[in-house]
Length: 468
Ligand code: SAM
Ligand code: SF4
Image (tube, rainbow, N blue to C red):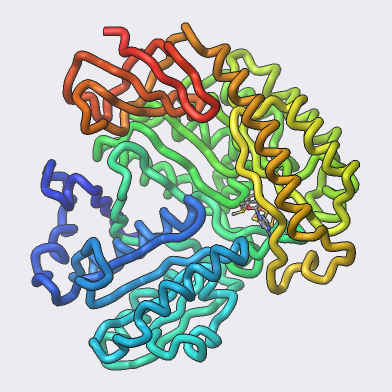
């Protein structure tokens, strides 16, 4: 594998010299206005990280990143098609360029909408020059070269590639937390989900290559690593080392300089006691599991092809609750899946009471192209979906308020990642992934780990004071 170079925000803004050998070539050769790119990202953390890698590919070719599409020669939209609204947003952005087709700008559509709509995008928005799905990103350098040599339209829409998208340069936007994809694609076939179509089959990255990147990130000053995958815990080491996901978590946490390891998203079927045992044994693994349930009704789970029952899911929660330290639990939930009855929905509400999630992402079912759910009978009316979502969110809000109240008076370690304009006001995350806004008499706390006592709590965040 070629040497990987990480360029982070501070290095790009010049706040701290952190450009690795060779990485500055692209930055120095770029002239203002020429060879510039802008990238906007929609959707999940995987997309955010893919954009960081795409930016790395462009930096490596001598491009410079700019903050607005108007100032850019190349404009990329990294798109999401998980729900219809997200996909529509992309076409509305593309519409902005309708009247400016001749300004010599290259417009590219990346990600899930690109994969899903393919050539259709050229039909709907003829001013687009590049369409590339996430499973074809390894081809991006070639596609860019074709555009640079004068081709007007290029496309990358492979699906069944065995390769993962690794780049020589990654431009990391978050100077405090480094994202690292360990598994791409998805082999599950949830009846509502476009991901297996847009991101292709599951491909895991070799453990040695992951650990090498973590070591480099630690050397660059990152102390928090977030391992990513649509089903991160389905990780299967393709190398002869055959490291399990739990072993990998411990190995990443064991790299000198790493203080926090997060992982998302876990699939309930592949979540086992070995992961909880690793969390018990290794304090650097954060006190948080994101374990989407989607529905509390076994009947609906079966229709969704989630491959577990309500009871099996609750057994996984019991494993987590039996850990030696409190572990925060979060989830994704879909309401209004075809055929979901009032009774099924009541079961989802009762599951909230049992699970006691620290937060949830909840959505109305959105029918998506190519998915089995698109053709399922007994659609729930839009109005009813909206009603159920509001009821669910209110119930969860009450649970979060009560849970957060129990944290008042407790002290947590916070990794500081935000400063308010108001002097002495800071923000960060606890190991359990709670946002904690706090005051401190100290300055220069960004990137530091500090002990903060919680003084107040709301449903979505905690407020506290730095224990100096
Ligand atoms: N791989 C993860 C998993 O299995 O939970 C998450 C995939 S997806 C990017 C994030 C969430 O979007 C899902 O957990 C699900 O709740 C929601 N989602 C996916 N497809 C949806 C659809 N067609 N309508 C509504 N919500 C959807
Ligand atoms: Fe989509 Fe299901 Fe795969 Fe998650 S596990 S990405 S919801 S198919």
